Amino acid sequence: MKVLVAYYSESGNTEKVAKAIYEGIEKAEKDILPVSEVKDVETYDLVFCGFPVHSHSVPRKAEEFIRSISAGKSMAFFATHGSLRGGQLAVTAFYHALSLTSKGTVLGTFGCRGRVKPDLIESLLNKAEYRSWALEAQSAAGHPDKGDLEDAKEWANWMIRKARSK
Ligand SMILES: Cc1cc2nc3c(=O)[nH]c(=O)nc-3n(C[C@H](O)[C@H](O)[C@H](O)COP(=O)(O)O)c2cc1C
Image (tube, rainbow, N blue to C red; front, side, top):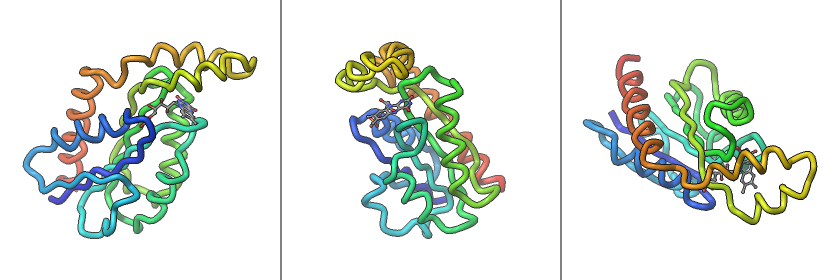
């Protein structure tokens, strides 16, 4: 089993989760790379792809990476987001990521909160339509925390067990 942990991260939150996943992967050959540095996904049996949620969706660079993966490759998505964990808005981004892949190849998804840049929160607090989101996002400070990273590791090993039993 050869596993790739690919990630896109602007302020380091998703990178932290990617590194925790990578470190937690047991009994498999593994690599970790930003999506911009991935050369050949074909040699991997399972590809994890992580991204920050942007505008309730997948940032363009992560989207391009997901689209570039050939049909049938086993994948698992992880994301960090300012919204509450499990909230509908964060889940919407996973739906979009899933729509970029061929049917039946995504083994699972994992999301956790990630600190939102204070300047972004500040600017959205002043816009009526985004104010409630900005208020919610303030409490993402301090994430991903130790508990998030442990959960990510556990999830990743579950994904690997799923890939092995396919
Ligand atoms: C341009 C931009 C748009 C964002 N849009 C959302 C969003 O729609 N929903 C959400 O929950 N978080 C949103 N966030 C917060 C990020 O998803 C969150 O802070 C994430 O952990 C950043 O990850 P990174 O450090 O790996 O870039 C946004 C952040 C930025 C910079």
